[in-house]
Length: 409
Image 1 (cartoon, rainbow, N blue to C red):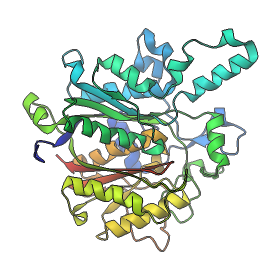
Image 2: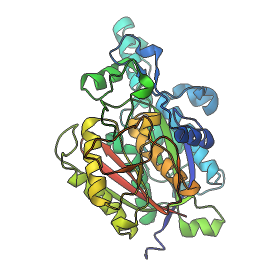
Image 3: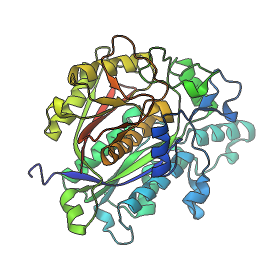
Image 4: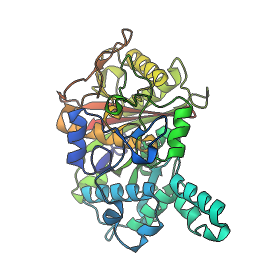
């Protein structure tokens, strides 16, 4: 196939995030540049008692139907986002050939709250108190399975678990399914919902979370000199991918083109990124190369930007080396926190919106860069600037690196 024939479009997007559960609300939240971090009642008394949660949405009502009782929270988030994305693409599961539709949904942990509840019931009341649905509710692939059931998608269905790179990795895998001819439509993204005392405490104990308990809204501050860790969040985002030739044939709309992807593994440490960032940089360079661009043709960077000392330093270095022309940089985690497996998918959606709308959202809480960071970070207010090309980075525990290259349609 030629590069034109291999061209893949984003035709639909859906999201449920701490900044909003629909496109306009989400985008307004990003552009406002204000963190959604709040103290959470369930985390009261813990060393870190705040997070970025999805609020103001009745998930059971939004999912609807009698099957909602068998779904963990992360599955509900994924299903709501997937339905939004399919509707946005102008597609109908009642009309498509389900055997040609794939589902790829990255999830890092799964239904941990269901597992914890089951363990408590076992300890308190014995084996008969444990739900027979505990396993299908907690397994990470439950989101992909339930979305496939709801959409009648009978093509390949996968649940990549590459920690915080899972959502971006799912989108990259979705492109591969189209490129190899296994699918005509792929529903891809990520979901995560682990705002439980156990998981939040575990991240805090390893030193990953910000300890700004006196100022939760100021805690997530990507690339800031005084950053001290990330703010954990939850959410889901899903995109619909199709070959551009198929989109034209059905009279559909291409919101952006997924021009290239790149993936590498640091093979260095279970949680810390490779200190010099060269392996992560190779993933970004691979995405740019697959897109057919020179590095100086990249017009915008949507950074992983976790607000942790090690990751931000590594990422700032690779951006400076690979893109010395200083394209504008943003980092949505300042607003929505670190949504783990959903992060790469949420940031992919944000990148597409930037390409469509000619606006780059600011990085929340960023007042001053460390003196040795040579980045053009967008701060304080949105920057009106039309860009044609952009890359979105995702890096995960285990050394997983994924980059997505998007072009304006």
